[in-house]
Each structure stands twice: as structure tokens, then as C-alpha cells.
Image (tube, rainbow, N blue to C red; front, side, top):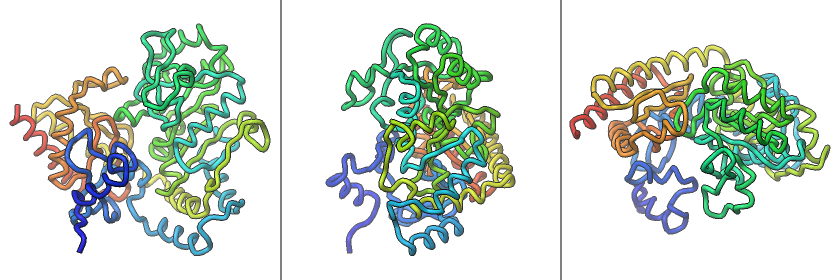
Length: 430
């Protein structure tokens, strides 16, 4: 009988898949050790290849707001699958899905379905460039918007310096069309637009960052993005692939009562299936083919099985769910803070709704410069301690953890206990 432990599966994977994984963070390079291969998941638990169960705070990196294998979502997928897996033609399901998304996001007048968050952000930026007839875009340090060439860019040495590639395979010429600024720095944003506003097509931002850990916007920062874009004829894009339907049914823009020009959605709106959305003002979206000159297409866009999972998930996004998530989130935040204080370890907890991060540095963390001070080695030891105690925390310091509606108070309390023991071990090692 073949050996199917995580270690043996990883060794096999290394012979066929780069790094043994299909997405880099899964390789555990940031925390050491071998990745956990998953055989199944249900509710707030996932089960590794060796049969060990873990309380899961990764949740497939965000989509599983209802928990894994929610019966209604599974049923919707099964019913759709027996009618055919893909048609490459329009369906009523797509129309219903689009109408449902529009009720949740008043800023979205027209939308397109795609298959991934990367595809959504890439398409939104292309639409913004086509609409404005401008080339340059602005992003913020620490915000991740997928692996399109023009988004894998780090900041230059100053305000007037063009971006440089942050990944092999990204041409310098493409990187130079991306300008990178510090997150939460309204003054630098306004200065850039004063200098170059007539050349900027769009500003894209994670309204609450999850890809440098959970970092909230300072009061007025998001408003300044929308305002400077409006004043200079650029397009404001909220990348809500992570925060969409996570912080509220209408995402961060509902939470903060804001309306950007364009929005990208993913993860939760697909119910765990490959489905994402980009959309916004009708005049911008009318630049998309076949209405306009901006081309975007996809064989599996609006896939009936994926849309069915999304619709089933969206039906459960009711106030009681978000009340529960907030209660559980506050309970976890308070418990983690008590554990940190008792251990004497330098760390801080940051949370917005059901997104939460333990940073191994002093807080608050408001930007990538702040986050970059975090002690990666201590986080890796903390992660290992949590894993040994049955808690699957995100295997990277700069990734948010997610609470689901399937978590219980007992799950939260067991997680706090595991964290306290892991932090105490760190303190003893000093």
C-alpha cells in the first residue's frame, strides 16, 4: 500500500511540481518543515494526510466564511454538476449571480465573471487603462493584487522613481508603468498626483490589507484615494478579493460607506470554487468587449458549477453571521492579547472583523515598513507550536488568519490555550 503521509506526498510532489506546491506559500518555506497535505475538511476542521485534525484558520485563504463543505453549498454544486460542468455559453445562473452581486455592491453597475482574483485585478486595470487612455497605475507597498506582471512590482527609491520588478520574468518596461507608495500615507499619494496625475490611469488598493497581515486603513486614507482619482480623472479600484463579503456582505466599502469606481471580488463570492468578479461604473465597464475596445475573455468565465456555489454562499450572508464572526473575533483577539502579555513576548494583535494577525513586533502596524519589523523566526516558532497543538494558522507572518461561521467558542478557547502554550515556549527559549 503506498505511503500517503504528508512527508511522502511532498517528496512525490517535488518530482512533478515546482517546489512541490501549486502556490508558493503552501510550501512552508517561511516557517520551516514540511507542508500539511489535506485529505478532507468539514466545518472549522481540516484533516491532514495522516489523519490528524486541525482547527483551521486559513479557510482556503479566505473563501470559507461558512466553513468547509457547507451542506447547502455542496448540494448546489452537486445539482449543477449533473447538468453539465461547462457550456461556454450564457446561463440564467450568471444573470442571477450578477444581479445578486449588484445588490450587495451598489458601486457595481456592470460586472464580468472571471476565474481568479489575479484575472479580476488584471482585467480591472486593463479596463481602467483603456477607459482613461493612460498607462500608469499606483499600488501600495504590502498590498498584493495577484501575479500579473504589472502588479509584481516594488517601490523605487523615491517619489519620482519608477517601479522595478519584484519577480523574475517581469519585463522592466512593464514594471516602469507601476508606481508604488506607502500604505496609509495620504500625503505621499496627493504629492504623486500633483506631480503626475494626468498620466495615472488607476489606483488599486486592498481597503483592509490582508497580504502583509491584517492592516486597517487610517481614517481618511481610502477617501483620499477616491477623491484624488476623481479630481484627476483616474479610476479608483478597491481590490476586495479578500475583504469582499468578509467584513460585511458588501465588503469594506459597506463597512466604511464608500463607493470606488471599480471593485474586484473573489474567494467568498465563489464559495470556494474558481470564480471572481470585476466590475464598476457602467461607463468604465462599457469599454469592455463586445461593447468597447478592451478585450477580455475566458472559456470558464461564469462556469455554472462555480456560480452555483457562489449563489448558495451569498444566500447565507445574513446579519446573524457577521454578528457571530465579530463576537468570535473579539474573543480570539482578547485571548491572544492576554496570552502575549502573560508570556512577555514582543507581539501585537490586529483584527478587522473576522481577519486577524499576530505580528511579532510592537504595534500598531500601519504600513509595510511597520510590518517588516516583525520577527519572522519567532513567528515560525509560534506557527510550529500552534500546529503541534492542533491549530492550523497561516504559514506566513504576513498573511491574515480567518474566522468562519463554523468556528465555535470552544474552538476559539482551545486556540487561545494553544497560543498561550506556544508563546510561553518562546519566552522560555529566550
